[in-house]
Image (cartoon, rainbow, N blue to C red; front, side):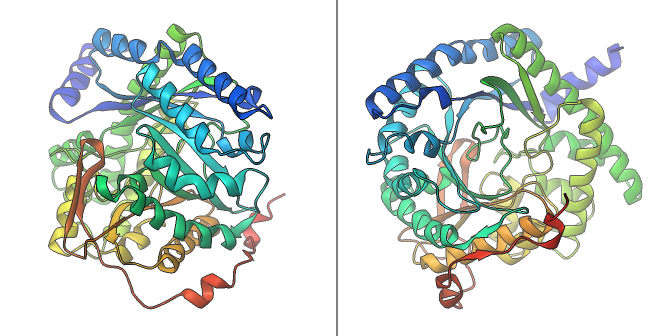
Length: 452
């Protein structure tokens, strides 16, 4: 039973510690919209998204007002578009992206995800066309987000796709160089991508999902940091307990919002993603949680261990609060979207190498990292390969979202504002992996993938 103290504590979290529901994301299957005529397919896609998501934004706003819970974004995710492109070979898949953008604008959502391809074991019809078109698609749209899954623990890593994505990331940045390379900020390369992730830019509605569902992503780095600050000098076992208790409370709030949105929209409730997703706002930083544990600066030796405690405790607390936890669920470490990460990168305590080590124990991977614009595509591919290997071997989701800053060098900055934030251009290791990347083929699945 909820008591007065619990209610007052939640109000304090919202008012003082940046507690919010980061997103309500409606997942919509477009499989029934496939058609050999791309014009008919696009018409079906537009009509279905508008029909299903027409009240999504209003519902989110109504819930926010009635319960006093900030709901920052309302989003839509759809079936990977490569599956629909396969039904109309020879057609320009960018038309799908333009249709998604038009539908997103019509229903009023912040982003729409699913301009995606799943190629972890090879390319199916439609995959290559969609991947090749990503730079143009993201340069000609405002709301569309794109993702490509290049590996899984079961299948290994498709190195031909990894090589291709190095060039695609760079071309996407160049295609949007006049807008601070923002296209690359809406493109994610995954290993072990979840089918129910509500967070952009990696959200898509997987083929194993229902026709439509509501997924909610919560966020509360500031709440966790405040709880640790209040606890004072305690040992790490107690630190973990405090984080678990806090994650429980945050997840319960997220489930309340998810169930209420599900009821009002007459759409099944999917999952709560209990990830600690930071923002550039002061007091809403995962890096500051790690520093509250006792690190002088995020990136110092001990950061990976502190992050492991945080990520594990968040998951343990969340699964006690909801039987429908999914998505990514843990701690995000996006550099440009986290005020503490930005500060650590600027002061030199946080490098890409350290970030890669941290990704072995966090929720996702190398996220929102700005690199010099003259970095060659094979280095980008190699960074993707390294991160995919961590995900494959550890049976976890990893991802890479790099932004090559065209015309800028290490030490310069890019700024987008909003949730995407901005930050310093970080240097990469310049020794060439070209021969390794050009070998292509597939990195075999690890032995732990054979669990049947």
